[in-house]
Length: 236
Image 1 (cartoon, rainbow, N blue to C red):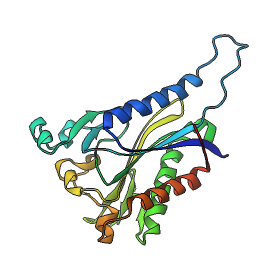
Image 2 (cartoon, rainbow, N blue to C red):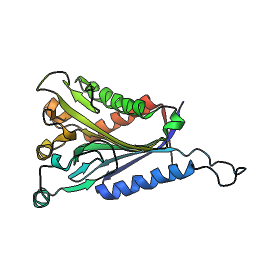
Image 3 (cartoon, rainbow, N blue to C red):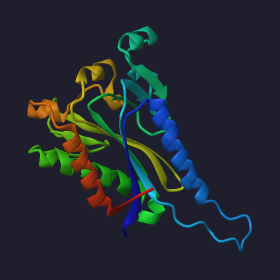
Image 4 (cartoon, one colour):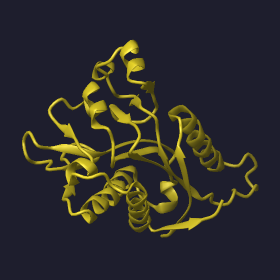
C-alpha cells in the first residue's frame, strides 16, 4: 500500500543535532502507537513517515553491537582530523559520515507499510542499487552483510559504496543509510569500516573517475526510494 511521507532535505548539519531531530520524530510516532488509557478513547490517526536527507561534518559513529577497537584514532588524532565520534543506538559497527555523502534517515512505520525489518533493509538496499546502476555501474549485496557493494564476490576487490544501520522499535525505524558520492575516502583509513578488515570502500566519484552532480544523485535516490516503498510525498 502507498505510504505518506514528509521529505526534509536539511542540507549540511551537525550529527548530534540531526540525531536529536530524528529522535523527536521517532518518539512522536512511537507515542502515537501506545494503547489508549481509556478503552473507548479513539486511537490517533496514522501519522506520516519522514525521510531526512543530510550531509554531516566529519564524524564516526559506533553502533551498539560494535567494537571500540574498530576506531583506529585516539581523541587527539580525532581532533586533528576535525572529526567527532559518537556511540549511538543503531545496529551495526563503526562507520564514517562526511561531506559529499548522502545520509538518509527514513523514519517509517513498517506496520503501516506491512513489511518487516529484513524486507525494509532489502528495499533500502534496492533503492541504492538502482541508483548506482543508473550511473553505468553494477552494484549488489554482500552475502552475510548489509549495505550496497561493488564486486562483492571477488576476493580482494569487494568494496562498499553504501552503509546501512538501523534502529527499530514497535515497527518504527530511525537511522538509515550513508551513500558515498563525492566522499573523501581517506577518512575510512582510520576505522575498520562496519567491522571489516578485508574489504574496501568506494564512491561514485572514485568508480566513475569524476566528481558527480550531488543534487542530481540525491534526486535519483529520492525517486528510487519512492518507487521501492510506494511513497507519496506530502507537505508537513
